[in-house]
Length: 365
Image (cartoon, rainbow, N blue to C red; front, side, top):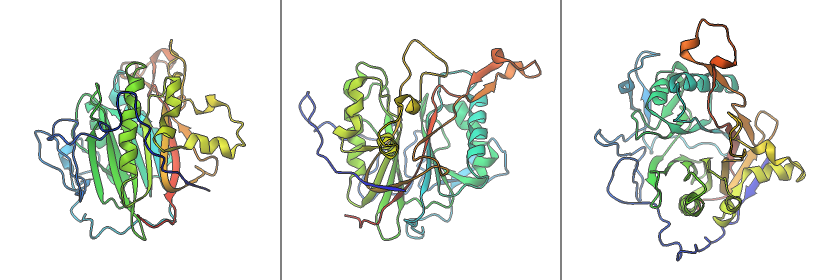
C-alpha cells in the first residue's frame, strides 16, 4: 500500500491569457451538458427531452429484460440515509474506452462484460466502472446484462449522444452526488462525469470519468484546459481524495506535463517509483496494438489523483494494471464457421486500466 498526498499546485496560466475560461460550463441544460451547483442533488442530470433522474438507477425488472425503462430511481436512496464508505476499504476502479466507431458494438460490449466477470467477483463489492465511448447499442447491451442488473447502479439509461461516458457503481457503495459538466472549450462535446462517495469521518472521495479532446491539433491546446477544469472540481472544499480516470488522449510530448501542470499525480509514476524507477514505458501503453496502425502506440488512458489518497496493489500485483489485452470477440455473421482470425474483432482499440484506491485519514477542509 502506498499513500500519496499530492501537492495542490497552482494552475499554470495558459498562453492565451490565463485561467478565467477554464471553468466548466454552467449554461442552461442541453444534451451532453449536465449541470450541478452548490448543494449537489444526488444523481441529478438533465436528459432532454426526458425527465430529470434524481436518484441512482437500479434495475427493477426480470433479469435479462432488455427494456431500459426497468432501470428506475433507487427507491431507498437518500443522502441522509446513505452509510458513509469506510476509509479502510479500497475502491476497485476500472476505466475503459470501449470504442464507439468499430462495428459490432453489441458483441464487443458482451465480450467486455464477460471479461470483467472473470476479473471481478460474481457479486462485486466496492467496485466502480468508468466507461468512455459508450453508444446506444453498447448501452442497451450493458443494461440488459444480468450481471450488471444484479450488482450495479448506473448513471444513465438513455443515450446522451453518438457516444458518451457512463459510470457503474456496485450497490454497496454509497454515493451522495453524481453530476456532469460539459467542457467550456471542446469541439467534440466532451465533458466530465463525477460521483461523490461519502466517507466515514466526513468529506467525500470524488471520482471523475472523462474523455479529453482527441487529435494532436488543436487537441494539444485544449486538453490542458479541460483537465484543469477537472482538477478544480477534485480540489473543492470537502473533497478528501480526488481521482480522475479515462481516455486522456496523451498523444503529444506536451501531454506528458498535463497532470503536473494541474497539480495532479499520475498513478503510472507511482508504479514506476515502486519499481525503483526502472520500468519499461511500453508496459503502460493502452492504445495502438488493437489493431496496429500508422500511429505509434501510447499511454492514452491514465489515472490522475490529488488529496489524501492511498493505492493498493491490484490482485496483490501492482498499483496499476491493464485489462482487456488481446481481448477479441466473434463477428455475429461467422458463428458456426471454423474459428480463425478472419472472423474475430477486437473488443476495443483500447486496453482498460485498473486501480484500487482509498481515501487517507485526513479531515475534510
